Each structure stands twice: as structure tokens, then as C-alpha cells.
Image (cartoon, rainbow over all chains, first blue to last red):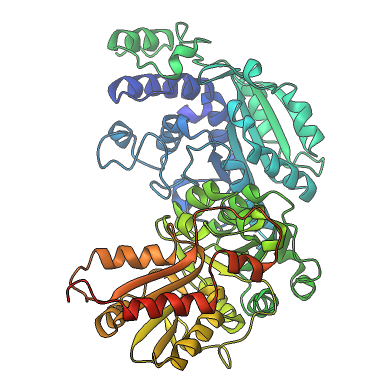
Length: 274
Length: 314
């Protein structure tokens, strides 16, 4: 059985890679990387019509990881899907590497947009969805955002426009881990009810357990969803998911694990070296 | 200038199926012919310039040639972050067209004045900054921008500006200034909407026996270095004139260029532009220009004083 048939195994291996990469390369934002792993696995392994052989195909589906600080997780996804060599991952955040701490444009195949400043991915994705209409393509556009990111006004400008234009081949997945850099997102800005907000802007909205791979696959493969509207998926997630001592502990927005912590995390993830 | 822009863009859209217009809820009736010709390539993006600019980047990533358009502050500084990150960092062929250069919308107040945009946009790597001097140059600049493989900022006036050229200048190239009048004593470099005023200043100087070469220095970035070297090498005074702040604009760009080339000449640089203050009272463009000293008379006075002033080295 190839790895792609067991999404839980893919997700566990990706988490193990992220924890180790964070430690080896002193790269922060591990908590927010771990929270979106299952979302990315569902998208890259089940929903997206993409492949390394046709990374520049005008008809390919697009995915923009708008929460650029989770760059490690999209690098790992693209490496594990064969867009770059998995060995290259370990060059991340070293001088001259193609893999900076936040993605650079056109740096590696499969990376659709450079992000890092929040609230940019959705407008770009809306543009790509409009381009598909103008150029008579039937590809779809997926944008993965963080919850804190939804505080940016540009997100709602884009949401309002996409709603008006009924961009039914556009999907947003919000990695709703309830934390932002320095606190609880709901205490800092009144984000809730997030699904209702998207619905009010003319979107079709779903709320899903962001760590239930079957549920995620079901919702992200259903685009267009038949409503004639763009689709927002509010995925309830846990920051630091998969490693007990990182889960829902916002220190891991910035903390770098020790070697011992990496070993402990790998044991929990069932990745004990043979 | 805006009518020339809309007309030329409509022609371009008919010739090139990559051309797509994003308007920030402006130009009532202005784009009727464009919409009629290519309805699916006209996007009224509403009052949401950040999204408009990010969308333009997304469209360009897919091979289209987007043109964003609204009043200057809203299509530049309001969405500067998107211009920087989405457009320039990605090196995308997006053309940003700003209507209402400088004090064109003086009567609408400082929110609609545009005296800082060149400074912001020319600091962005890869961005070309073009300020056409009349409606003919607007057409040429737009055509050049849409075929340019990178971001271009075009700053146009509003309406009824005097024409300087007899027709669309065939020789128009981004980065190559156009001499519109020859002269032997001083060089007057005009960028954008002030070109007719600078020609008038040339007339005033001529009446006093000072022969002025007048140049439409339509591209602020990249600078036409050849022309600058020639001007500073052959004339005693070189003046820059712009409807923009003296901080960071055209005159600043020329001063930077000159500072890096101390031996280029002994010519004196005179910079005429908008001062470092906001205009609080009511008044139209000619009133506002006068308040900032942006008049043919003042240009001529400044240049004459520089010509008469003994050089420091004498």
C-alpha cells in the first residue's frame, strides 16, 4: 500500500518532519504549522488536480497557503508530493536556500504565491478564479488562511467581491486554531461566528473538525458544492496538534523544540526510528 | 488625459485578449465602450482597492495583463502593501493607472491630492514610474506599459489638459525622455502634468534672452541617464519640475543621480515642486498650484536667479 492511501500516516510523517525541521533550522511557528497539516493533506492528497509533472499547466488547480508563516508545512507537502526532493527540505532557512522562512515567489515548483504578510492570499486567489473564467479554464482555487488572518480587512474585501461574482470554483479553508501570535483570537477580535460571516458575504459555509481527515476530504473535494457560491470551510483545529505537550499551548507560536522534545514528539507520532 | 486613457485602453483590449481592466468604482460612462467591446474583461472592483490590487496580481499570474484604475491615492498608497508584495515581489506585469496627478483634484481636498505617490512607488524594486506630459503621451505610455514584462505605474492628470505633441509620439519608450523644445542655456525637465506650464516658463525665459531646452521627462524610473548626462554636461542650470512633493519625487531622483556623479558637471540643479505641507483651504488646481509656487512665473524666476547667480567655484 502506498503512503498516499493512508492519509493518517502521511499526516503523522509530515508532523514528524515539521517538528524535526523546526528544531534543526530554528524555525518558529511550529504550532500553526501542525494545526494545518490535516487540511493540507486532505487538499494535496485528495482534492487538488496537481502533479509535479504539470506544475506549470495553465489548467491546474491552485492552492495558496495565505498563512505564510506556516511555510514549513507547505514545503513539506510539496516535498512529500514530489514537487521537490525531500532532502531539500533540510536546507530550509539556510543562507542561499530556495526555502526561506516564508515562501518566496516562484522559488519551487508548485508554490503558487509568496505569502507572509497576512490577508494577501484571498485577493490573489480571487484574481486567479476570475482568470479561469476569462480564459475558459475549469480549474479551482483553494486558499488556506489562519483565523488571525481573518482580522485583515483585505480578506473581507475579497470575500465580498467573490460573493458578488459567485466564484463557485473558489474555496477558503480557515485553520481555526483559536490562537494568534499573542493571545486568543476571539478575545482580541470578535471573529465568531466565522461561518456566519462568510455566509453573510454570499458564501456557502461549512464547519468541520479540522483533524478528522475523512470529514475534511469529504468537504474539500466537494467544489463546486452546487450552491453556485464560493465555499468557506471553517476547520476547527488545535494549535500544535499531534504532540501532546504542544497542543493548545501558544508558546509554540515562537518556541523551538529541543532534541529531546523532537524525540518525544516522534514517539507520540509513532515515528520511532528503526 | 483620462478620456485618452479609456479610449486607448479600449483599443488595446480589442487587439490583445490579455488586457483586463479593474476599476475602483470610478469612471461613470468612461468605460462604456470598453464594457461593450469586452464585457468579461471589465471588473468594477468596488471601493476595495486592496482586493483590486491583489486580484490584479492573481490575474497576471495566470497570463493576463491587468490594468488597475482609480484616483491616485486610492490606487497607490491605499493599497501600497499589495503593490509591494503581490505585484512587485512577484515581478508581475500589472499596470497601475492613477487619475488625478498632483493637484488635479485640488478642490476635493488633501484626501484626493497626490503629491507623495511617486516617492512611494519608485522605491519599489522593479516598478517603472511613468508620468505622461499630455494625452498623446498617455496613449503611448499605456501601450508601452501593457507590453512591458513587469509592473508599471502611470500617473495621469484629469481632463482638458493642453496637448503638447501633435500626435502620439512614435519614439515613446519607457525610460527615454522626449525633447519638446531645443535651447542652449538651460534645460527644463518636466515630468507629467506640468509639461505645458514648463513650456510657458520657457517662453518667459526666452523673452529675457535665456534659451531653454524643454524635455518631457515622462519616466521617473528608470531615469534617462543619457539625457541627464547631456543636460548636466552642457547647460549651466538644469531644473526639474513636478506636481509632486520635493521629497522623494522626480527632483529627488535626479538629485540622487547627480550626487552619485559629482564630476558630471558644474551645472546647478533647481528643483520645483510641492512643499512639505498640506493645503487646508478650498480652491481648484490653479489656486493650489499657485499656493505651492507651481507656476510658469515662479519656475522662470527660480531658473533666472540660478543663471545669474555666480557658480560656487568661480
